[in-house]
Image (cartoon, rainbow, N blue to C red; front, side, top):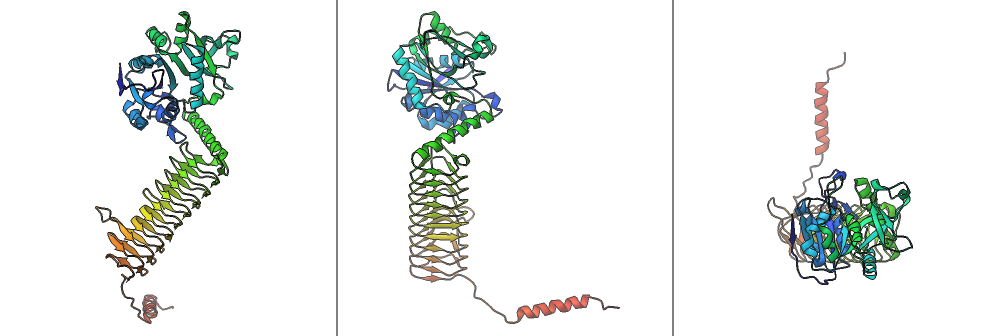
Length: 484
């Protein structure tokens, strides 16, 4: 049984892409669908979709989903691809049977695996061009890894031709065939007409009682259709993962490639093997990334920045000449050019730090906007706050933004001085150029140019401490018996 969702007119009737993503991945020992496990900061399936949509429009990409279909669909819905549901998972051949109605309007299709995240658009394009050039009914993308054990092998015709005689699974190899290193990647191009003509001839005559696309090579050959193969330049592109350890090997390869790409573009990464940089991160030339930095999600960093060790940035945008000192955590925030952050600062979602502003050690912001040149250098919390240009926030200042039910905003004008250890109880407005005396609790608006002091009058009792100590000593003496 299958269900096709959202089918629409094709942009190019010559080619569609089908991504097989219905399996469970039982060997991972995880409740999460295999294709939603992440490498390089994205689900496996997202990487494959990104490569496919460099070749065809998203509406020409059909993802076959099955195990936890709703969860997979929700995870990649924003990509714009279409979905085919394989309600029973009976093999790759059965998945294509489920996609029959979706692809029958196309002249050719490319089949990708949803758990092969390193596949490059350039390799898919090479497969597509070769398929057209050879006028083949089926074109197989192959590879030659150092250890081919466990993979089906490609038996080519003699004479240096690209034609394939058969795909032989590991357990069926003869002694002489064990030395063959060229493997089947599970990635194919098909002419749609011969594919559909032979799909229903697949049989489940195997140990798993499933229908396999690999069997199409033999079926097509028996009817005189041409089956050819082209080898990927880099075998790592076609590798999948069946265990978490193998998944992390792919993750390391992808992150290493991302780091090399950034360094080739002029970014200095000190000890790149220690950094965690997601595939979607963008960094401009002449920025320096120190060891043990994490750059996650869709973070974008300008030129001439420095990100110091142990800082974590997720979905953040930094302008040019920004310094992030050691051990800072930034999430879904923007930092304008020339700003200085940290060390040990925490920018929570919605923080907007203006040009040349300073956020110092142990300062936390949340939905806070700081204007140009504003400073909060020590031990402050600025939540739901607006701070004008040139204002100074002293050590220990807190904007009290939550009344137990609702969040409220504190608005601080330009050129304001807020003395240390002050508490600003929102909603409250501090006018331009105002001064707040240290240790104040401000509950009412402060007009521009004013001084506000909200603390109790100091009372000093001279000699009080000395007298207290004397009384305590007398009591101790009374409790101590005289010596005999």
